Image (cartoon, rainbow, N blue to C red; front, side):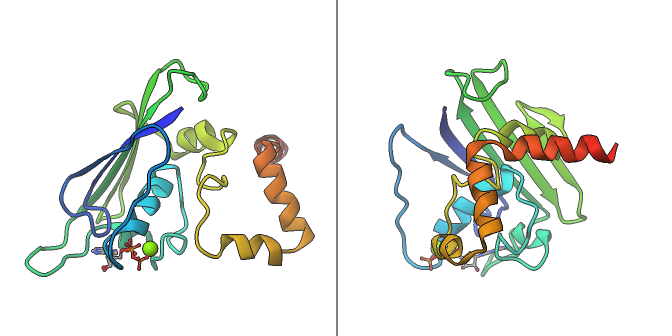
Length: 180
Ligand code: ATP
Ligand code: MG
Protein backbone atom coordinates (compact mmCIF):
# COMPACT_ATOMS: atom_id res chain seq x y z
CA UNK A 1 0.00 0.00 0.00
CA UNK A 2 1.19 3.46 -0.79
CA UNK A 3 -0.01 6.99 -0.21
CA UNK A 4 0.05 8.39 -3.72
CA UNK A 5 -1.56 11.82 -3.56
CA UNK A 6 -2.50 14.42 -0.97
CA UNK A 7 -5.01 17.01 -2.18
CA UNK A 8 -5.66 20.02 0.01
CA UNK A 9 -7.72 23.16 -0.20
CA UNK A 10 -8.57 25.63 2.52
CA UNK A 11 -6.58 23.55 5.02
CA UNK A 12 -4.37 25.70 7.28
CA UNK A 13 -1.87 27.62 5.11
CA UNK A 14 -2.97 25.73 1.95
CA UNK A 15 -5.70 28.11 0.76
CA UNK A 16 -5.30 27.27 -2.92
CA UNK A 17 -6.10 23.83 -4.28
CA UNK A 18 -2.82 21.95 -3.88
CA UNK A 19 -1.94 18.49 -5.12
CA UNK A 20 1.10 16.71 -3.72
CA UNK A 21 2.14 13.58 -5.57
CA UNK A 22 4.30 11.10 -3.71
CA UNK A 23 6.55 8.64 -5.49
CA UNK A 24 7.35 5.14 -4.18
CA UNK A 25 10.13 5.18 -1.59
CA UNK A 26 11.00 7.97 0.79
CA UNK A 27 9.71 11.52 0.41
CA UNK A 28 11.39 14.41 2.14
CA UNK A 29 9.66 17.76 2.41
CA UNK A 30 11.97 20.72 2.78
CA UNK A 31 11.21 24.41 3.12
CA UNK A 32 11.77 27.48 5.28
CA UNK A 33 10.25 27.80 8.76
CA UNK A 34 6.53 28.42 8.58
CA UNK A 35 6.21 27.28 4.97
CA UNK A 36 3.71 24.51 5.79
CA UNK A 37 5.73 21.28 6.17
CA UNK A 38 4.06 20.30 9.45
CA UNK A 39 0.68 21.37 8.05
CA UNK A 40 1.05 18.65 5.40
CA UNK A 41 1.59 15.89 7.99
CA UNK A 42 -1.30 17.31 10.00
CA UNK A 43 -3.52 17.15 6.91
CA UNK A 44 -2.75 13.42 6.64
CA UNK A 45 -3.42 12.88 10.32
CA UNK A 46 -6.68 14.83 10.03
CA UNK A 47 -8.07 12.65 7.23
CA UNK A 48 -7.08 9.51 9.15
CA UNK A 49 -9.51 10.66 11.83
CA UNK A 50 -7.67 12.94 14.23
CA UNK A 51 -10.26 14.43 16.58
CA UNK A 52 -7.99 16.46 18.81
CA UNK A 53 -7.59 20.09 17.76
CA UNK A 54 -4.64 20.33 20.14
CA UNK A 55 -2.75 17.59 18.32
CA UNK A 56 -3.22 19.71 15.21
CA UNK A 57 -1.85 22.74 17.12
CA UNK A 58 -5.23 24.48 17.29
CA UNK A 59 -7.68 25.49 20.00
CA UNK A 60 -10.75 24.19 18.19
CA UNK A 61 -11.18 22.05 15.08
CA UNK A 62 -12.27 25.09 13.04
CA UNK A 63 -8.70 26.37 13.32
CA UNK A 64 -7.68 24.01 10.51
CA UNK A 65 -9.72 26.14 8.06
CA UNK A 66 -7.66 28.77 6.23
CA UNK A 67 -8.06 31.88 8.35
CA UNK A 68 -6.87 34.44 5.81
CA UNK A 69 -3.55 36.03 4.97
CA UNK A 70 -2.38 39.26 3.38
CA UNK A 71 -4.50 39.85 0.27
CA UNK A 72 -6.46 36.64 0.84
CA UNK A 73 -9.76 36.32 2.68
CA UNK A 74 -10.52 33.55 5.14
CA UNK A 75 -12.25 30.49 3.70
CA UNK A 76 -15.30 28.58 4.84
CA UNK A 77 -14.25 25.06 3.97
CA UNK A 78 -11.17 22.92 4.61
CA UNK A 79 -10.94 19.83 2.45
CA UNK A 80 -8.24 17.15 2.26
CA UNK A 81 -8.21 13.92 0.24
CA UNK A 82 -5.69 11.10 0.46
CA UNK A 83 -5.35 8.69 -2.44
CA UNK A 84 -3.94 5.28 -1.55
CA UNK A 85 -2.77 2.59 -3.92
CA UNK A 86 -4.30 -0.49 -2.32
CA UNK A 87 -3.56 -2.93 -5.16
CA UNK A 88 -1.86 -5.26 -2.65
CA UNK A 89 -5.14 -5.15 -0.62
CA UNK A 90 -3.25 -4.23 2.52
CA UNK A 91 -6.48 -2.55 3.61
CA UNK A 92 -9.28 -5.06 3.73
CA UNK A 93 -11.60 -3.46 1.16
CA UNK A 94 -12.41 -4.52 -2.40
CA UNK A 95 -10.82 -1.41 -3.92
CA UNK A 96 -7.38 -1.26 -5.46
CA UNK A 97 -7.45 2.55 -5.16
CA UNK A 98 -8.91 4.29 -2.19
CA UNK A 99 -9.62 7.99 -1.88
CA UNK A 100 -10.44 9.11 1.65
CA UNK A 101 -11.81 12.64 2.09
CA UNK A 102 -12.59 14.84 5.04
CA UNK A 103 -14.24 18.25 4.90
CA UNK A 104 -15.00 20.77 7.60
CA UNK A 105 -17.21 23.79 7.08
CA UNK A 106 -16.96 27.00 9.10
CA UNK A 107 -20.44 26.30 10.55
CA UNK A 108 -19.03 23.16 12.17
CA UNK A 109 -20.51 20.68 9.70
CA UNK A 110 -18.28 17.77 8.69
CA UNK A 111 -18.26 15.45 5.70
CA UNK A 112 -16.34 12.19 5.38
CA UNK A 113 -16.10 10.04 2.28
CA UNK A 114 -14.49 6.95 0.81
CA UNK A 115 -14.20 6.92 -2.99
CA UNK A 116 -16.70 9.75 -3.24
CA UNK A 117 -19.35 8.02 -1.15
CA UNK A 118 -20.33 9.68 2.10
CA UNK A 119 -19.43 7.62 5.15
CA UNK A 120 -19.06 8.03 8.91
CA UNK A 121 -15.89 8.99 10.71
CA UNK A 122 -16.14 5.57 12.37
CA UNK A 123 -15.88 3.86 8.96
CA UNK A 124 -12.59 5.65 8.35
CA UNK A 125 -11.15 4.98 11.79
CA UNK A 126 -12.07 1.30 11.70
CA UNK A 127 -10.65 0.99 8.20
CA UNK A 128 -7.27 2.20 9.41
CA UNK A 129 -7.32 1.09 13.05
CA UNK A 130 -5.63 -2.26 12.65
CA UNK A 131 -3.42 -1.23 9.77
CA UNK A 132 -0.99 0.69 11.96
CA UNK A 133 -1.65 3.88 10.00
CA UNK A 134 -4.65 5.35 11.84
CA UNK A 135 -4.53 8.68 13.61
CA UNK A 136 -3.52 6.83 16.79
CA UNK A 137 -1.11 4.51 15.03
CA UNK A 138 2.57 5.12 15.09
CA UNK A 139 2.95 5.85 11.42
CA UNK A 140 3.28 9.50 12.34
CA UNK A 141 5.95 10.33 14.89
CA UNK A 142 5.82 14.00 15.79
CA UNK A 143 8.48 16.06 17.48
CA UNK A 144 8.54 15.11 21.16
CA UNK A 145 6.90 11.67 20.61
CA UNK A 146 10.11 9.74 21.15
CA UNK A 147 10.83 11.40 24.51
CA UNK A 148 7.20 10.79 25.45
CA UNK A 149 7.64 7.01 25.02
CA UNK A 150 10.71 7.01 27.25
CA UNK A 151 9.14 9.23 29.89
CA UNK A 152 5.73 7.55 30.00
CA UNK A 153 4.37 5.12 32.59
CA UNK A 154 4.53 1.35 32.18
CA UNK A 155 0.76 1.29 31.47
CA UNK A 156 0.92 3.75 28.62
CA UNK A 157 4.02 2.03 27.20
CA UNK A 158 2.00 -1.18 27.22
CA UNK A 159 -0.83 0.50 25.29
CA UNK A 160 1.70 1.65 22.69
CA UNK A 161 2.87 -1.95 22.22
CA UNK A 162 -0.76 -3.14 22.02
CA UNK A 163 -1.56 -0.56 19.35
CA UNK A 164 1.48 -1.53 17.30
CA UNK A 165 0.67 -5.24 17.68
CA UNK A 166 -2.94 -4.70 16.54
CA UNK A 167 -4.45 -5.79 19.86
CA UNK A 168 -5.95 -2.37 20.49
CA UNK A 169 -8.71 -2.95 17.92
CA UNK A 170 -9.97 -6.06 19.76
CA UNK A 171 -9.94 -4.26 23.09
CA UNK A 172 -12.07 -1.50 21.52
CA UNK A 173 -14.51 -4.07 20.12
CA UNK A 174 -14.71 -5.80 23.51
CA UNK A 175 -15.42 -2.47 25.21
CA UNK A 176 -18.15 -1.64 22.67
CA UNK A 177 -19.71 -5.10 23.09
CA UNK A 178 -19.68 -4.75 26.88
CA UNK A 179 -21.45 -1.39 26.86
CA UNK A 180 -24.26 -2.66 24.58
P1 ATP B 1 8.95 24.78 10.79
O1 ATP B 1 10.13 24.60 9.87
O2 ATP B 1 9.12 25.96 11.70
O3 ATP B 1 8.56 23.53 11.51
P2 ATP B 1 6.74 24.37 8.94
O4 ATP B 1 7.20 24.37 7.51
O5 ATP B 1 6.46 23.06 9.58
O6 ATP B 1 7.73 25.25 9.84
P3 ATP B 1 4.00 24.91 9.53
O7 ATP B 1 4.02 24.88 11.00
O8 ATP B 1 3.45 23.73 8.79
O9 ATP B 1 5.43 25.28 8.98
O10 ATP B 1 3.17 26.16 9.01
C1 ATP B 1 2.93 27.25 9.84
C2 ATP B 1 2.21 28.32 9.02
O11 ATP B 1 0.87 27.90 8.78
C3 ATP B 1 2.14 29.60 9.83
O12 ATP B 1 2.54 30.65 8.97
C4 ATP B 1 0.68 29.74 10.18
O13 ATP B 1 0.25 31.06 10.19
C5 ATP B 1 0.03 28.99 9.02
N1 ATP B 1 -1.30 28.54 9.41
C6 ATP B 1 -1.65 27.62 10.34
N2 ATP B 1 -2.98 27.50 10.45
C7 ATP B 1 -3.49 28.36 9.53
C8 ATP B 1 -4.83 28.72 9.16
N3 ATP B 1 -5.90 28.17 9.71
N4 ATP B 1 -4.97 29.66 8.20
C9 ATP B 1 -3.91 30.25 7.63
N5 ATP B 1 -2.64 29.96 7.93
C10 ATP B 1 -2.43 29.03 8.88
MG1 MG C 1 7.21 22.13 11.31
